[in-house]
Length: 590
Image 1 (tube, helix red, strand yellow):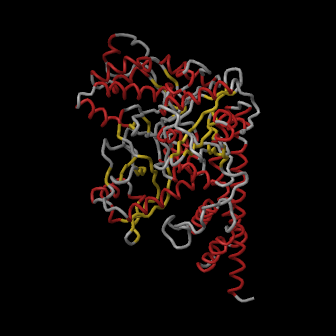
Image 2 (spheres, one colour):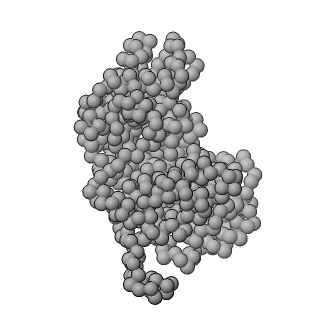
């Protein structure tokens, strides 16, 4: 056998190993996601959260297994570039009738870069652009179901939508809830439009499971107009199902898919079909974020970076140091024309920080694994990112070489950043407060201070203590929601010890300027928060009106006790004012 023929056989075998590795990954991912229905039916809420954490690790485990197999069977480090190029072509051929070709291509990239340690989006052997189309991939069962109210009647069609999910629990009163849905549509739209000949209701085949809820997502098509909708299905106190509300605004449905919340579990054979449908009802939501919220974080990263490179080709502004107070742990920069920030861990931290690089990375990973309850920004983590050096301002270049020289490398016209995190950009809360106070907007000060306190409460209930509560570590989203985004000091609530400051033993101790009580690393004294939070009269008045108890160790101790008892509170990603129990005075309150 000639050398060329031997190389072709090796390339073909490598391609099959890579496809096998991906197929094993997606089979396990799919099985875990499909079990979400049973966990919901059986109210196994603790398992729901554990399954989300476990599923995050699936991808890296399969990449590692596949990489080890290629090393073991083919001595992958020693293969020529020609073999890898041929393996890629063979791999593409194996994806012709594949149900998840875009995910498989990303898997190929991940394994290849593990083996040859190439800059991730900066070589000729990976899928920089998709090679296999995801259009018109057939799914069994189909991605969405259709209902025809002109034939069956509108009420009967809506009722059937929920019955077809075949949950093993009965509904408390489905007829009542369908009536609420119809009344909700009428109140939100003002009037129910006349039926056109093409009227149909399209509903994604799988519910979207998260925490204690199952979300039914679809759209109604009537004439030339499409009406998106989402309906959360919850458990009543006696274990029966009920519909909590109907959400009709595309932007509110987009909030369900905010990266500040936990990922969904969805039973889907063809993920691209789900993403395509979701994009039709949320056209402003990037596909990268939709893939991420479906639990496919690596695909989300791939598509994010493709979008970024595309944007760089169609813009001319420069990366700059992000506005705001400089952090002690992270150097943050941004591209003004792109709605994200880029964060790199500094080589040397400020003297007041008692963490190391590995601890910071561990904290950021923790954020991906917990329920972020809409109050913590998710991050995309990248290694060996190549960006055009010419797009970096001179100030930023100087700052990078000053603060993170170990993470910077130059390669021709590119600047290589060896490790960074990327988050959605928000307005820092301290800058927002300065702006609205200067404008004399006492109403906005009160609103955002209340939001800030609510964020701290909800994180605490979700077993997260932010550690550093300074205003600069929180941001304000475009919807006015306050979100935490500085993670180097976060801890589990249950690992902290919340204490009251003991009274001084004598006057001299009180006046000495030194603490008269012992303090361990995990001790927290909520009374001290007041010193650095209440920085103006307006802020003080608003904070004390809504959140004075946050300065009392009792609030934190009581919250810890609830967590230890296994209590899981509900966090609704939509306003209480939309819930049927509040709108119509019926249904359940949870």
